[in-house]
Image (cartoon, rainbow, N blue to C red):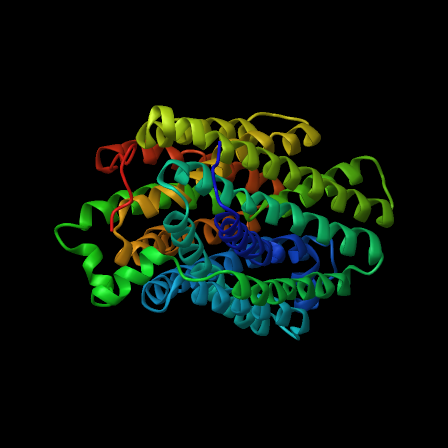
Length: 436
């Protein structure tokens, strides 16, 4: 049971909003890609050329997003340790809100790429500031619950992105897919207003204020000295495994749902209007299944971490991640069943991220907390960026793009098993008091 004061709840809610909108803005492109990419490239939506281009550009732009995300995480993680958590939260939220909204005015793919890079820097920086702030404000006994509760904003952000895209692309502008995606991107501006509200009610944590005035500013190189290197390795390896799996899988949910819907529509001889409606509906089914599973999986990290410990928790989640992905993409399932199988992927592949909001801050002392957490959680995205690009590039070259994508994603299911090999380097933090 969480025993938080009104102000502690305010801090948790502020960070919750920051991370939720972070995910919301970060993944809007994945929803609109089947309409956005062909339009900017001058291709007819739904043609084989458009499908191949969508797969390729989804992979490439997701990889670019991850690289910018990694850079933002490192840069703003250090900034949060220097100027404060709440100030950094405000800056990063404004950055990703404006970057996403400007995508609506893209005249070509390269302008879209530029806007996504700007947004990605803010997206990467927000997490370290929010997670560190929550860890330092809430009581020791409530840190795991507060951290997991903070990460429930991620599936909430995805639910919001799913709903916004469906209402705009599937209802309001269902007959005009060439322009509907621009209105979806405009919704990315919402966090800008929330950022100013957050700044009004949230002050810097006392723990950080005391430490920042009594010690020298943190340096990134300190993460690699003899004392901190084992901590950095532990956090990095766990985050890397989870990130590689999540991004290789999640980036293509709308694309897979679109492919399955078009295949079904062709088999049932549906007209264009019915096909477009089925596509948007199946996007909702797939992403909602994934998000709901992620929400449940996130909350399940609380008992797993508190009673089993962090190392056993990671091992269980990685085993379940491999099994769920291999089953979803490897078994000969009917299209609708495959969509609902994303629920099992959500519980494991998505759910494990509920632990990083408390595990990474537990590893590092206060003056290095945001720097270390931001580095471990985000630098792995440099390597994770390879996943979506390869999946998209390989799938776009197949004779049947959908079947090729399913085959590639099946093999992605082996990535979580690497996490089991990393366990000897993982540091157990169960019962550890947050270090100053």
